[in-house]
Image (cartoon, rainbow, N blue to C red; front, side, top):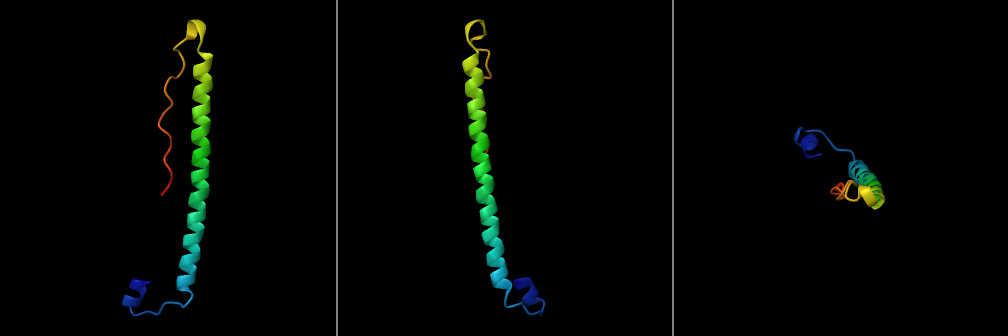
Length: 75
């Protein structure tokens, strides 16, 4: 909006409300995406636990070993 004003144009009175609404929707989308990240991280951990648990007897130690670093949240 500063660029628009510095160029000598007027800014709509609804601009602040539109920006606030967009920021709210973006925050909701990030929150939803981070929920999916948490779910994926839990699935990976569970899969590694199962695979490592199945590596018994002659296969002891042949599982995938350490779970990889989890995916980070979106900021």
